[in-house]
Each structure stands twice: as C-alpha cells, then as structure tokens.
Length: 158
Image (tube, rainbow, N blue to C red; front, side, top):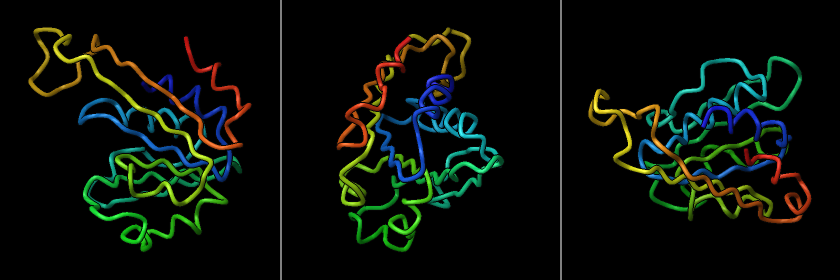
C-alpha cells in the first residue's frame, strides 16, 4: 500500500482530491503515508482520527498534503466547512478517508480509491487485529472528471 501511494503521488498535483474507502485496517493511512513520502512532505503521516485533519507542508516547494479522517463526522460538506477544505483545495493535495457522502461537492474532479482487504491471510504469529505482511489488498482506482480523463492512472498497476 505504501509503494502504491508513492507511485500515485507522481500523478498528483495541487487541487487534487483523493477519497479513500475501505474497512478498518484496509491500508488507507498506509497508502496516505506513501503519498506523503512521494510528495515529499514534512512530518510523519499518521491517522488523523482524533484531530480530524492534519496538514503536511512540502519540503521541496510542492503542494502540501491535507490528510482528513471523516470517520467521526456524520454530516455532509456542511459539517466539514470548519475544515476549510474548499479554501485549501486549490493549493493542496487533499486526501480524505471515509469521505463518501461528505466531500464530493468540493469538486467534480476527484480520485476514488477503494481498498478491499482479503481477511484471514495473515500469518498465524500475527497479533489479533494487526495487519499481516501477507494480507492481500485489491485496490480500485477511479478517476472522476476531466482532470483524470488522461492522467496516466494505468501506470499504477504493477
């Protein structure tokens, strides 16, 4: 997941909205960690579950990464207005975990990443609830809007 994030980062630019979906433990934050590495941002990318959003400035003049966890937010874009995502979007790459039904109104151009984790493939020695290194993930990346019509998403497989 981390390597996929690094590859995806090469396609991202300021103004991009990435929505991540998948069950708990699917690898959404790990993918975002790879995005942060690929974008060259400052600070460790960790789950923003309790702070809702974290901003990671670029170390090299690129766009900052805004990492949002909308899991605890119940409403749509109205509830998220306090985060000022609409203000941040033109200059940032915004990644939203659990954003379905909450942030689609920000832009017609967005990238949807759905992660499915194959359950029960972890090594017997793994602690309960931990992600095993042998767990298989199936990822579906869908670009919506003109921005993604010819963005090279096919380069992500492999």
